[in-house]
Length: 393
Ligand SMILES: Cc1ncc(COP(=O)(O)O)c(C=O)c1O
Image (cartoon, rainbow, N blue to C red; front, side, top):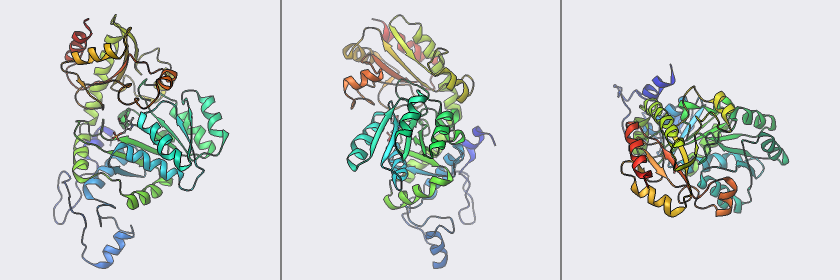
């Protein structure tokens, strides 16, 4: 079955008594009874599948987990209360029986960097940051010391760099270090990191997977070697997605293929239009033939699909001019988040990367005139018309 068909069918139609619901309902029960105590005992022992207690398992959540596991070609998945809860669990699982060192991309979602530095740091975990697009530097940093895990994003936030995941996975495999990939921006419609050799994939389901701006959630998908540790952690700590959010995410994913196709097509047009606008200093878009990672993009992405995100710099602008521009937007929503059906614009200096010092941001190339658009599924003419009127001085 092709991935477009899986998004529509997978996870659903599990038998419930003498009938089978066509789409998975919202199960709110906190615990479950079985015909016999022997059977409940087998369920507790994971010898028989089925829910026993909501922290361990929930039928709505497990339908979603089964769907995303299949889309990402993993051995098992866990749906979490947020994207960050998922990344936290992935890193924690990797650290359990390994050295207290992580190698992470130097440019990622700000909260992921903060979590590594400010939460794992004081617990004695050292994080070495490196540019994952510089493979020689990446390999040298990884091999400096024994490492528990590598953390990178498929499309790095917010300058939309694309590391060579296949080559990074090979380097990690040679060093016997698990590779954790945040695939939120790419979605399994564009890239499936486990198929390229990664070990754990994380999603903020808040974004493209759920897709409608009404869910906070995450999903992590692991290969066989890493799934048991994750499941044990999840069952013990319980940072899991609730049944209502699981239902909405499951429902959202049914249109993921259509949404991503339209968002990619719209983003290509918005990026070209912005690149030609006299008030725009620079655009950052994986579909740009002059993109610094064009080789990786050509190898890893399907043809003509580069994701729905476009970043750009407004010529000569600082915070005041950026605020003025964003306040003029009428249809495009100026809010944090991404991957929704509606077009969203975000100011990384204020949002995703506000916790970094100005010097640190400057080193990474995140300037005060940089904005990020998450292109939605509206008529692209309307998106461009709104940008055009807001860019009029
Ligand atoms: C790439 C990426 N990963 C993880 C997260 C965190 O997800 P959540 O807000 O669902 O915890 C975000 C949120 O913006 C993100 O952009």
